[in-house]
Image (cartoon, rainbow, N blue to C red; front, side, top):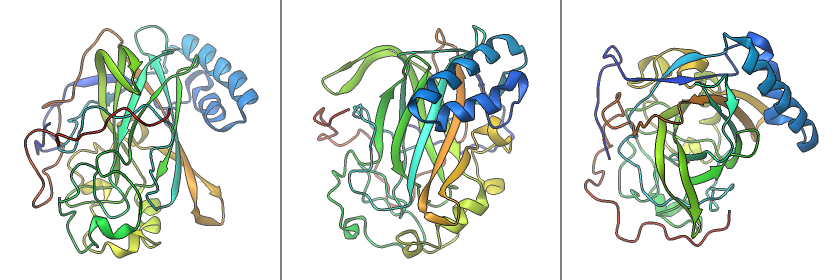
Length: 308
């Protein structure tokens, strides 16, 4: 695990990435959006169109920073679509598309996308004694039945179109970071006993949320029970200001008039399947909040018992 706090002006190692919300070349933005949110039958056709467009567009790629995995990573996350484990919060359907940036932005079927993030009050599973800053109830007070080593962590394996889907909640925040989701993209391994084993990490990054959306969410319950100074995007030590090319998600409300009903978010990430990037030391990840544990993960870190 790493918790390096480096200024955003420091040069970082770079990883090729495609962001459908920022790049319109060859129809990528429209086709990618349709692929992410259409019904299943329509999604297949839209994804096929997106693949064709990105393969011939020539200008579909942008550069996206690869950053540290942060101080709250745990090995052994479970392969599953729903990672909430009963944690309360505004629903978030997250759909990510993995493409090969070295081969015309073609899909990478079988890529394993791993995500992890804090709960509505800023707590991470496996590190529930860490103070998220400000004033928040104790993690144990949320009334959920979540395993404190597994909630809001998981893998999904990309389908033939390179697409993965997660059902989760909108993350909260902790000092000194803005609202974010961590992710890694793995290739070359396989699902084994409910987890993903072997292979290599091709990309380590973070996903971000527009300030106006995050701040509206944080007025809702249970988020509003965490008070204090929220770090906006421009002041975050990791977000590079690049919009979608910096990991900023494109978001759509499930119900236009009611943010509490949830959001859908998407991003397309281009990787080099032959590269290895663990994120260690490759950008500011933020220091843990006060009292955050250090050293090895808990000895009872997740076992492979959850369904995919």
